[in-house]
Image (tube, rainbow, N blue to C red):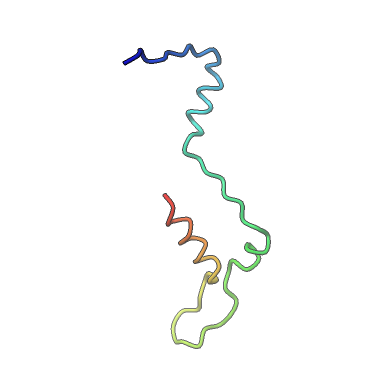
Length: 67
């Protein structure tokens, strides 16, 4: 087996910033989805009215499925 490659860090500021930002995820949601995020349709069932639309719930479950 060969030797492990070694690298010399020349830009510590950039390295530190990248280590802080690793694991961050940006999710872009369309304006149409945001406009329909809250549920405005009344339900025919008894109990509390819906807070979130079906689209919001499906989006949250989709994001949760992929770790």
